[in-house]
Length: 375
View 1 (tube, rainbow, N blue to C red):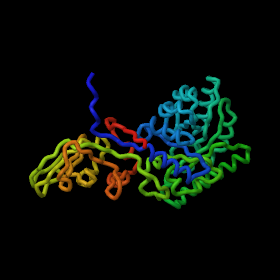
View 2 (cartoon, rainbow, N blue to C red):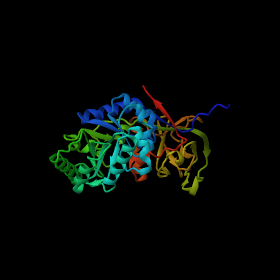
View 3 (cartoon, rainbow, N blue to C red):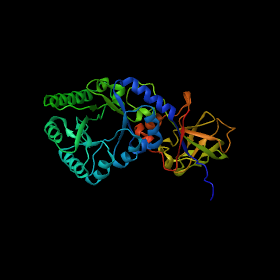
View 4 (cartoon, helix red, strand yellow):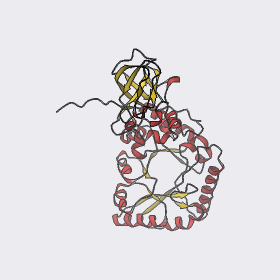
């Protein structure tokens, strides 16, 4: 059997920094518990290692988008909640696994109840309330009758209620404050009919930074995903002092001295104005480097910023080595990450690409090896 070659592109993921970020979030929102949102394989960072580290650090539970993600986490002994809508044929597996189910309509409550009765089980459920996201859930203004009826259905333990913010990255946004008021009004109406919940949550990462009202009573849980990675929405405040946990790295595979006037890459978008030492890095957009880095971005080689020359291609990117003439084939290249003033941040990439940090973190390709550091 041939030995496996080492990866040309990898992510260093620092689990110690992850735990410290969790601790800072826990301190900010106390006494609320913290639910870690681990959708899409923990945003592409590898859910098993991330979840184990957070479980050991005292996270209150996990939240995911859909059933297959939930089933990967049920063995860790913490509550696992599906946040989004569910399809009828997904219910047998999730009911059997003891996953927390969302109720986003009276019809969904009836389907979950029927499956719970069929399996002779009791299923914990949380009501998803649409206070202004416009995507899923019971509309807050008309939710009370459906909640009251669902709470009477057999096989359901309706222990929680939650909602979600679309613009909580804008501090002081009246729309967000209105959502909180609408949600609290519904809670008061429900309490007037004797319906109360043990788990109440609304705050996402942005609200944790910008809206303390979303983790004050009656709220007793918050949900956070991207803040655990040390990233923030580009527009939001950054009241938490968090550390980036990831660095995307590759290696120099070639170094060439190219003449003035030579054009580089697909589309010939860069012309050398002088004789230049050019390095080729074994990473491209298939690995998560945004095409927007073309002729605009940088990588770090020997702690020195080296500008990208030409268009980022699928597997390679070319960079100027004018500032590091002693660079050698095989040198490590930091595409994202680093320390101090030369660090290249997720937020910088997001701004270059005209997107938000979530998309950047979720974009690392399948051939990028995930390496976990744990000091």
